[in-house]
Image (spheres, rainbow, N blue to C red):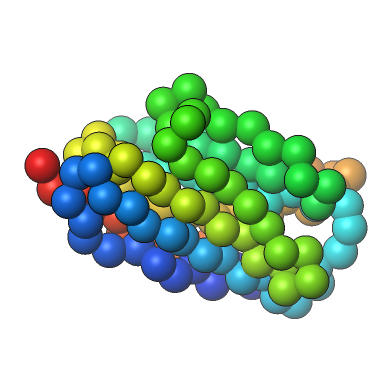
Length: 117
């Protein structure tokens, strides 16, 4: 089992920034991929970004150029730096840990991000 603990959500004005963190513990092993998803009220959960252990990243078009994902492998922690936030970024953000090669997913409890206009 892998446990994920997220932090860093909150309320921010449009144009502001927030940094989310997610620490993985338990049966963490390589290879793996860590990422972020989000779910806005009344909408389906959507993928935001992922990063491999080797630093390869990918982003949803809606956040490209504004969000940056990074990780500290020694701490099994992934970060999401969110800049130029928009009201449409308001959602619960979920951390994902994907254990490879079986592609088994673990999820964090979610952290609320609210962007006011």
